[in-house]
Length: 240
Figure 1 (cartoon, rainbow, N blue to C red):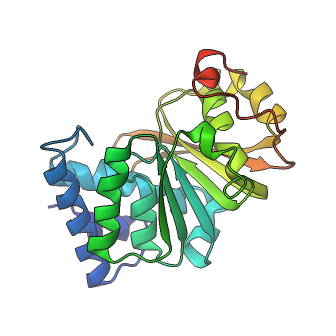
Figure 2 (figure 1 turned 120 degrees about the horizontal axis):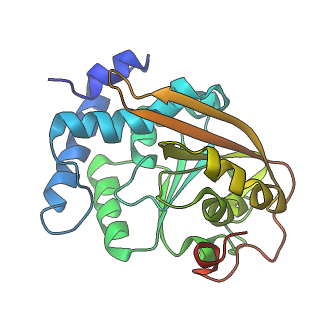
Figure 3 (figure 1 turned 180 degrees about the vertical axis):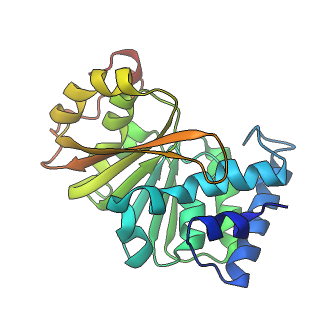
């Protein structure tokens, strides 16, 4: 069976037996909770290891700009984290991360608190908030080395949701799939207006599969103007 250790070997990520056990525990918690709450459509353990765990961790091998996540005690916020992807897998693989998990649904945050307690994870904060609300909070704005998101949203809106959290010099990394050329083009104005610069797009094939993925890497060059993010729902309804 292709489990987390199979994929981390392919990704050149070393895990201890304890870390592997934590990944398994986390997967089982998600699958069990999924019986009463919609967390994922993926419940087959082998598929879970590929499409949730390997996908989350591919960032480290596919995007050299993210190498610091694996080496240093950097601050990372996962915006629209859902069941905890990619934030929790990154934390399990690289325990030094100072991780914040933000989601708009309180039931998901309650579940993630259970995960944090069960796995005894330190330096993890969970936040129940709309992304736009959190981005205006002085305690969160301009505070993170990295913001990551696997949330399903147009890149223009996602940049407005997420870039305000990143400190100047830091990175927002969006996990994307499929053809993103048109999306990239339509988000150019938003990225620039919000203080960012498109640094790279790293396309790759998910480990030992024919699934294509991309990482859109945006460097924050200057503070996001105070007018952004706009009121909840505006970015989706009226992209920049």
